Image (cartoon, rainbow, N blue to C red; front, side, top):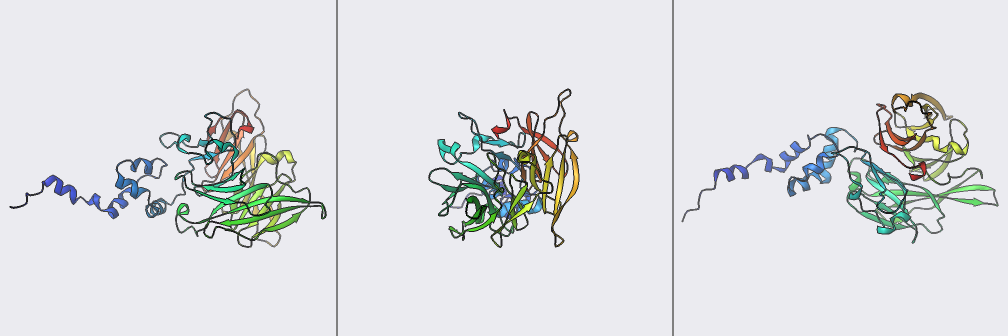
Amino acid sequence: MTEPEPDPIRRRWHHSPVHDDDLLSEILVRLPPRPSTLPHASLVCKRWRLLTSSPHFLRGFRAFHRAAPPLLGVFHNSYLGGSHRRFVSAVDPPDRVPAALFHMPGGLDHQNWSFLDCRHGRALLLGPHPREALVWDPMTGAQHRAPLPPGAGEVSHGAVLCACSHAGDCRSSPFDFVLVWWKQETECRCSRAVAAVYSSGSCVWSEIVSQPFPPTVLPAEGMKKPGTRAGHAIYWLLSSSCILEFDLIRHSLALITAPTRSAKSLYEQCQLVLTEGGGLGLAMAQKLSIMLWKRDNSSSTAGWSLQRSVRLNKCIPVKRGKERAMPSLLGFHEESNTIFVWIDDGVFMIQLGSMLSRMTYKPLALQDL
């Protein structure tokens, strides 16, 4: 008995070139690099979902478009109870990511967890009891917990970093994170910064390092700003017109003086940023503008130089008949070169290259962030 001849339509479907994974990848990689593109493509079928979520495809997708991963939104440390979410989307539909998508670590106790840093698709959080650090991938829900090093004090700053050489996909690569805390020592009348680095590859803390500074050098009270990575170092803004530097290669701490001396109250008006060449910069807000400074390390004596001034009324809408409040700089996103500015009755994100802006959040007060 002879086999029935296959249906010609099904035969053509079976041999369709779209069923070749390599060819399908070449087609999908040319989709526009919008945040909603790959999630929508993954809904077509299981095969497309597996392909568009694979690290190999994601590396090729970013390399093809030569673009950094988009800024989907921000996490914050306020908790108002009830259904209040700690994620604010930074994009409009259809690219908007709903806050309900993310299940916060700690379950109902998540209000006791504080965000220290977010970078390369990972978030670094600090938990209350037991005292531990948590690295969380919001998109996959993956978690990595680590107890704080022995003798660690109250952690004031932290940063999570991809441990690869950026030739691979950061989210599938090992990571490191650094924690910083402070000790007040009466014998030397100094304020001592202490730091340690944790490696996810070995699950081991590095040797603890410390450096004494003048007793007036302290982290800001209350809301603390995330660090900014420039080159092989992480920098944090302190309240005393100083910047704390942690060298990621030498594992050493140092202090940098800001370009102008300012009162503690002006901590909210300053934000560490990156310059066009990837070096360390500092944004300082005034009533109607933001001054952008650049740290110059080319000479033996490093210093600051003023690069440019940004007029806020040219990129943020002005309400007629209302006196503009002093802006507060809340944070900076390294990959998109975007600074977050709280002014009047909203939080705006400003891309420092194009100077395009949009409102992302309308808080009740600055303390809500």
